[in-house]
Image (cartoon, rainbow, N blue to C red; front, side, top):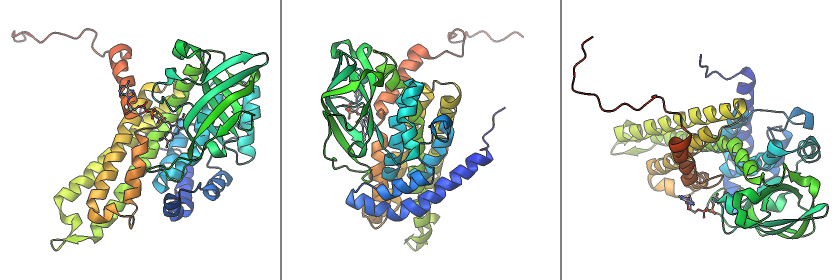
Amino acid sequence: MIDFTLTNEQITLQKKAREFAQKYMIPYAHYYDKTGEFPLPIIKKCWQEGLMNLSIPKEYGGPALGVVDMCLVVEEMAAGCAGMTTSIYANSLGAEPILVAGTNEQKEKYLRPLTKDLKFIAFACSEPGMGSDVAGIQTKVRKDGDNYVLNGAKFWITNAPYADTFTVIASLDPSQRHKALCAFIVDADTPGVKTGKPVEKMGHRASVTSSVMFKEAKVPAENLLGSEGTGFLTAMATFAMTRPAIAAFSTGLARAAMEYAREYVNKREAFGEKLRKFEVIQFKLAEMYMKIEASRLLYLKAAWEADTSGDSTVPASVAKAYATDAAMWVASEAVQVHGGYGYIDQYPLEKLFRDAKLYQIYEGTSEIQRLILGRHVLDGYDPAMEKVPGWGSMTPPDF
Ligand SMILES: Cc1cc2nc3c(=O)[nH]c(=O)nc-3n(C[C@H](O)[C@H](O)[C@H](O)COP(=O)(O)OP(=O)(O)OC[C@H]3O[C@@H](n4cnc5c(N)ncnc54)[C@H](O)[C@@H]3O)c2cc1C
């Protein structure tokens, strides 16, 4: 039996997130998009409302929500403001390597503070010279007595200037690629750790992105996550848990774009008719709706796999690749439906268009999702037919 019904708790949670987006995000989204300021008051409110750090287990003070629950929340928030949601959700990304590979002591020391106070934890994987090729990480680490010593540079790190803690992937020997990667928890005030200035971005301007430099930064050996050489697996397991949420972000953004378009075609007239009367416009709305519905089903399936099977890599790639492309398409068509008004900042469409683009890039680009899926079809997929039959003969059946 298949059941698409949400539980009462999930409906309550979804409603709470929707109300939060309407009350605290939408009214301020334009301001933060224009100024590029970090939306600290909104994030603080979100933390106070218990809508942040959702995956932290109860024993460390968190609500222990599943990936499905988190996705329902972030769809609502991304419909409010993509940039603010990236800032808020970056804590879940930063904490995930600890959830995946941390010991009870590491979880107690680094997850509990996130639930006691508003603290930021950032995931530092990408570097100036690489993002997609995680095995190509160049940030070096060496063992030195009871410490590991980090040297190198990370780039594109969301929330880095505000981070209290980083989860960092570094290499014992870059020539050994994925086999030499290790994951660490690094306190931001460690001597030798320095963050750069926020970079100017096209969209998600209510999120802050900067470099992080490590110069002879000493990290206690007990801050190694898992064992030496397991950093690549930790990074991949992290993405398998977090990518469904990027598909949910995309669904929320696309839904908002469609709703703005729906409202506009009910008001705007051309050739003496409301735009809603034109079949071409109706078809655009129909296509938007189909893509949003499909995106939601895919993120729910991926999130359900993450909650139940423990390996959601393939469905997460399907959901992320599909929903992020869908959001880009819906945002573009919603701009189109608004004509010239879609292109200026009198309406939020041009912001949604700029914001949608990032979904196709971060947490694994659209191309990387397709690489994962291509490899799955060729090498991992279990064919439904025992043996692919040849083309039938020309003999008619005699039964
Ligand atoms: C606003 C923002 C926030 C971010 N936040 C974080 C963060 O918090 N933490 C973090 O670690 N990273 C973060 N990132 C980094 C992000 O994950 C990377 O930018 C992304 O993974 C792509 O890496 P890249 O930019 O180095 O592009 P590249 O890897 O250089 O790729 C360039 C292009 O080539 C394509 N490509 C690469 N390899 C292949 C291939 N084998 N086959 C086909 N096509 C290929 C890519 O799909 C892409 O289109 C963020 C990025 C941005 C822009």
